[in-house]
Image (cartoon, rainbow, N blue to C red; front, top):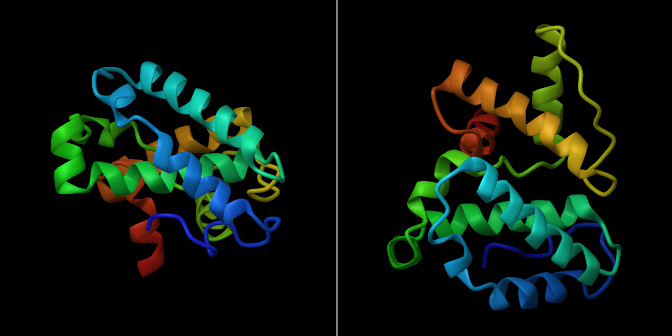
Length: 158
């Protein structure tokens, strides 16, 4: 339910089914014993690379967006979170990037004389994502007092 056609808007036919099939086979136990952001990032990067190879577009950015939306949902699901000890991942979760979220972050970066590069989600790469996510973490904590995964909720209210 977390990923639908709007998540993969503009992607080739079959992308939604491919993403859903991939998410259904993820063993959430891989996240159960994660205790650091670095270990979480390694695990998330590996899953992103796996999904990227399956997507018709081979887009790293779309693969990451799908995983970020999915992980946000499962960490906030009472049953899954309890069963797999996922609540502890919340400080590590990324904000799901799309054009509206990226534009909000770019606007804030400009005000702070910070720079990062954003073209679109389809062409997003790991290095660019890391820079944006670090900035998002800072904004989330300084402006809203929350973890970056919640920025989407705050940005929609603006």
